[in-house]
Image (cartoon, rainbow, N blue to C red; front, side):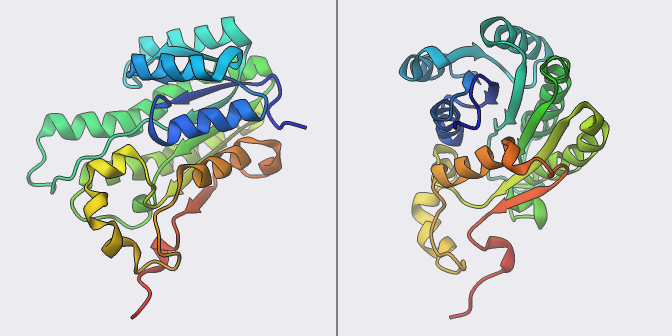
Length: 250
């Protein structure tokens, strides 16, 4: 049986990159998916591609009114939300002393405040559904730090702590909250960080010496959101090709 038959799933940042693959994966397993993003044309095109089991709702994750509207859209179209995937993110390569305060705030707001607003907005709907799963996409960089991406790392570290606190607060509502920590994955965001030029040097030292593929992360997201992970909450699921292990010599 499909793991998500007739369940309502909201995925942020799902008009491109990993989020698009997540949306396809949930629909393939029977879910009704609300695609949310600021990229309206791409989001509507994906919803059209996926058919009756998907709709688009424009969402700036830093805007609480947008969140209220997105959850209301999900409720009205498909019923109470069972799964939220906080996937939206951006990445800028700037050393801490060079990043402008406005850019810092925007990046931290998208990753951390956006995740908070999503949890806050969706919980009443999940309670109506009798429970659910929240999957927060953090990063392998939130386990150690990474040169030149201080705002990104700060936001993703915050997501780790928020995940654990939310898991404690929501467990008695039958709502599980976990985080996923990808390494370098072949997505448009990674391309913007010039991984096309640096990938051979960056990945050859990994235990699994290649970039991850979006579908590999989607399989992890589907597992964590499903009843297959029913006894896991406040946990960190890593999919990084061995990035956190350190470089392989030679």
